[in-house]
Amino acid sequence: MEKIMNVEEIMAAIPNRYPIYYLDAVTEFEDEKHITAVKNLTMNEDFFQGYFPGEPIMPGTLIVEALAQAGSLLILKSAAFEGKTAYIGGINKANFLEFVRPGDTLFLNFDIQKVKGPVGTAKAWATVEEKVVTECEFTFIVGDKEQKNS
Image (cartoon, rainbow, N blue to C red):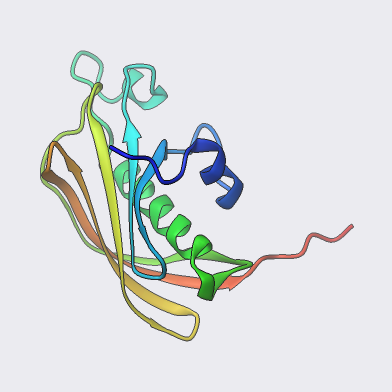
């Protein structure tokens, strides 16, 4: 698996930080179209401590969040959206097909389907060992970064 972007490069592009940061690398990137990012899961993840004790699995909502982070990275690193920020406008047709456990490598795929003005749609899916574990559709909104008042 060849890394196109590492953690430092990803963190320079998206605002997410611990404890809600879920990307370890990017392995595929096609400007304004597609990204595949990777999350390596270990028992040290905080959510495994309580979900579920004795049979730890990654919550489906956090898999969707990881997919959204991959999508945000695609949007923020694409030439058409330079200097912008991305927001989730909607999540549709989310299906959770398999458990994700400590030791798994989660591949996070995000394909932009359509963009009209500041709104777009995308298909996203997560795989473990080439098996789809989660799939959904996103509506996203691209906006200007908020200016902080001094």
